[in-house]
Length: 86
Image 1: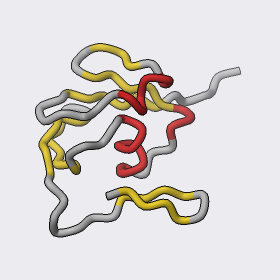
Image 2: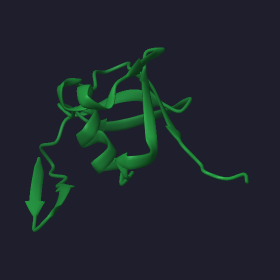
Image 3: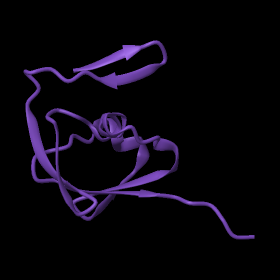
Image 4: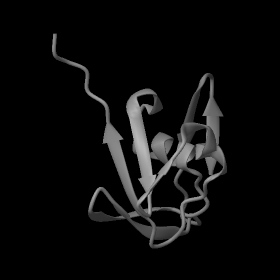
């Protein structure tokens, strides 16, 4: 269940939350069922402004995150952009 608190959205865990297993950045991870990619980032406490997401070896465009459901067995890579240089 996702609850809005002020301007912040957070995932509320309950004993009724069904978990699914995905592979996130090469490691197995249990996450709540029914999350879209944008909600997954909220669950993981990842700010979405400087990341890219690959789902099952395909890059998912940021505008598509809310409509892209995370499914059991998905292989996700979340990559952070890091600035630097001259």
